[in-house]
Each structure stands twice: as C-alpha cells, then as structure tokens.
Length: 60
Image 1 (cartoon, helix red, strand yellow):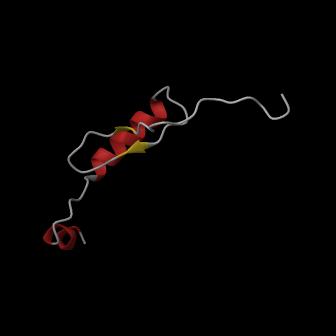
Image 2: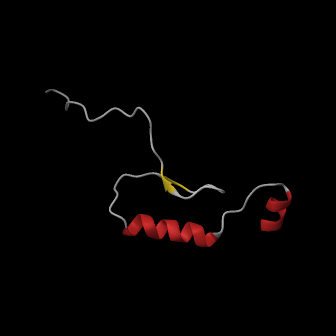
C-alpha cells in the first residue's frame, strides 16, 4: 500500500513519527489539545483562531 500511495504522489508519514508524537502528547502537560501530524511539517498542537473564552454559566 505504501508504494501505491507514493506512486500517486501522496506522502506517507513514518509510523515512528506518529508514535513519537503520541508519546509526546501523553507525557506532556497539555490538556484538551488537538495535535496534527502532516507530511513536511513538525507535529505540534493545532492553534484554533478566534475561539471565545469561557462565558458565564447559565442562570448567572
């Protein structure tokens, strides 16, 4: 399958990179993060733009 994907020009992310990233996530101190792993870029937490901060609880 790897060869077929490569022939079509689709990059294959090495399993070691995925495993190393998962290890970074579970041993890190971040919570509620969404990480991306993309060919040609270093894995890192996704930075959501324009996310509103915490609001008032209902009924307050």
